[in-house]
Length: 181
Image 1 (cartoon, rainbow, N blue to C red):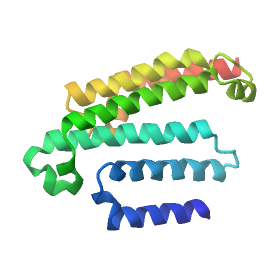
Image 2: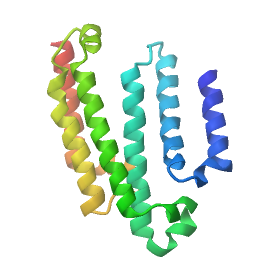
Image 3: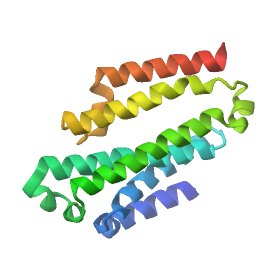
């Protein structure tokens, strides 16, 4: 119930005014993903991991900032009419935010992978072998938004880029082997 109220409140706030505040616009979108993740964990009666919620927030911010960058660069002169906050960003500023968020995602995932709490909970201390897949996936996405002018639709990029799909598949296989073998 709380998740639904928070989600509705956040969306109403975003629609009415938060989408017009630089930086807050991306953070609110990211928070909506955290609420969804929390609600999903609640729905399947699994405790929401702090690690999962933090990485959901950071990854959603990474994708959101990449999308803002795409809109700013690709739409050029019409960007400001597309989204008010785009006039308050620059591609340089967005690139700086993306560097910080990318670093945070990698560090948090590494801390998660080496965490004693997680090792005990999962019954293995070998989750660290999945780190290269996460790093490659992030770097591949950065390559796509910077060199291939992708990022306008993160979902489309994530489901259509073969190297990213292959990396996700390898991550799933590796994580499954680490957890169940």
